[in-house]
Image (cartoon, rainbow, N blue to C red; front, side, top):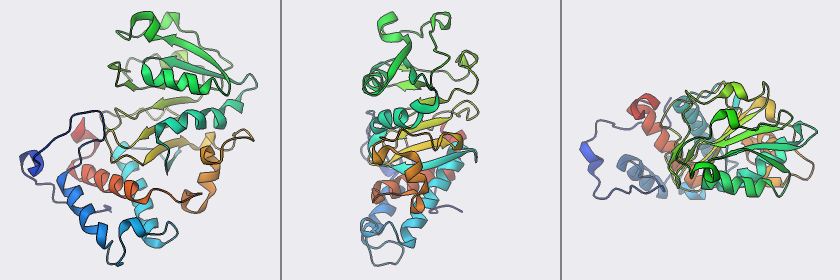
Length: 287
């Protein structure tokens, strides 16, 4: 079942006058903009704007459930991984990752690969809460012109997790999943990927990734919706002082997975857009 049925036999250029080719927010199909404009005033006959919906009423539950279902279909997410839709951007997950996972090993060390600006930011944020072991540093080694040779990588086998940014937009460096040396990461160590800027551009090896996170605004929707896709085994390990909005288990166990009031409109438009992309042919069409 689609969240919304669209006519995908549109004309070339989708009837738009202006295209935005910057990193974000992404261009949305005209059909998605038109539908969201219609339901801005009256959502599915409720007489309410979609922005006025309570996150405890059935109409919002429909938006939430359908958006997650469309995401699972588009990204081919297995049932072992749960999907959370929250706020705070991908940046808030820097803290959340540490506070939810660092206690999984007694040494409390984070393995992190620096491959550009975004992973540098994550390193600096994680360092506030734990020891960060830099596996490799593309910035210092070669100014992000290539990946540091894997023979030089320094992975702490007692690290709680392994993090890397899948695509560094500022530095122009993208990881290749097919040639990435997955075998170097100790078996059982959770692998975390920031996929904000290349989500929806290629298949994701979910057998490798335990947690992926992304701001929707690059490729999937408007700013304000943050997507976390988390393997079920990673819930329940948070530090006692985890910030309340960074607590994955708290969100997962809250009614409909929302502890506080979510940003309804960005989530709704994200769901519409992914529904549109699924009807266009899904991930295969865009890759």
